[in-house]
Image (cartoon, rainbow over all chains, first blue to last red; front, side):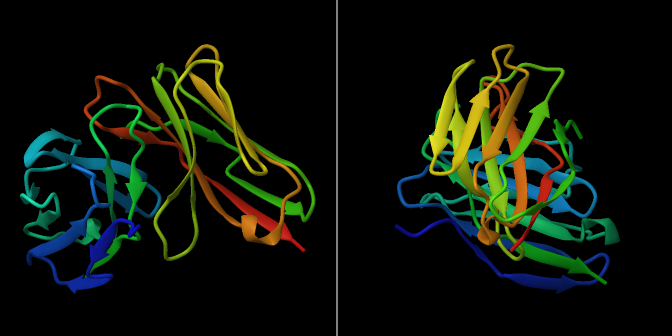
Length: 114
Length: 112
């Protein structure tokens, strides 16, 4: 069974640009989650999508947004990039929204802002 | 953002030794999870705990969901070099909309 896949592996952008990160969940999983892992800040919850709808978002500005497609894959978009957006962005998926459905992570997209 | 208190921050041990790490929170959780992350990879789920007092094993790993629902520990017995990595605890509440709250991580180094 294929795990969560993310693309691209690395992404280099400059300040003010826009970035799009992609995630394909484990087959059969309907919930997709996005986390930011920045140096010194640990893993921070960004967004949760389930059945194509945004269900919850963390304490991040509106320039962080995303969507989930009918095949349950997801995109994270970051507009007006700032230097502090440099981080590893991790996508996770689960079989549902219940707390008994653990989240499984992909290997992330390393976003570097120059 | 909100985080769990995970300790120790780092451990340097000899191969064959047992390891213990723990997480505490001021809030209760419905679920406790333990993940391991190696360089260049995402966190890999090790153990999931769903009931207060639950003790669960996965090979040489054992984790417990604290009876107060505010803490959890992870033990690794007879450590081996491939145990090297960063271990994270994570807590989840049923009414928190899928959000996992992570500890700061415990970096484990194993000397052969």
